[in-house]
Amino acid sequence: MRLWKAFTRCEIVSMTKFIRIGIADKNDNPPYFDKALYEAEVDENEDIQHTVLTVTAKDHDESSRIRYEITSGNIGGAFAVKNMTGAIYVAGALDYETRKRYELRLAASDNLKENYTTVVIHVKDVNDNPPVFERPTYRTQITEEDDRNLPKRVLQVTATDGDKDRPQNIVYFLTGQGIDPDNPANSKFDINRTTGEIFVLKVSILETFHTVMTECFSRFFSMKHDRYP
Image (tube, rainbow, N blue to C red):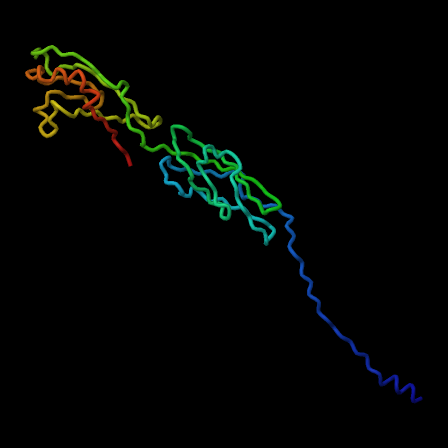
């Protein structure tokens, strides 16, 4: 009887412990880009270090650090990428007349896995090339004291613009001996600003200017563009 009472007085004691288990993120996912193709434009005279665009990749592995690299298509080292941010910037001289388009292969790597995208950069033409005469020297002869049919066309010069795909808005000017820019009525010669045709206006001083006329078109010609914003 006493033994039974002893058992009925026993108490059951329980204990609970919390164990925290951390799951480490394994680098088992490659980086990925939102698009397979990115495109941008840049002026051919843009400054070195100018950022053209920024391309970023994502990674499902939260602890991954992504680095970027241009792996192909970067002809002449024209561009570079900041390896931590994906910012692609101008790294070398650009020339629309030489190359209008670059197709870069951009890699994103998390040290174990990598992925790729394509970046196409279009180079925009700007008015950065001077006009060029078709010949370095133009020569002609004028008969002294021949004042018939003045003004008289004696020669035509032509020039082309190095900016190939822009309108050929070339304007011609005469400068130097025999040209009075302040009072054109005193000038001995004139030029059609659009066509490059040269005219004699006065012949009374041809004896003085005869030698100059045979040489002056390379020494005293100036030429410029109409520039647009």
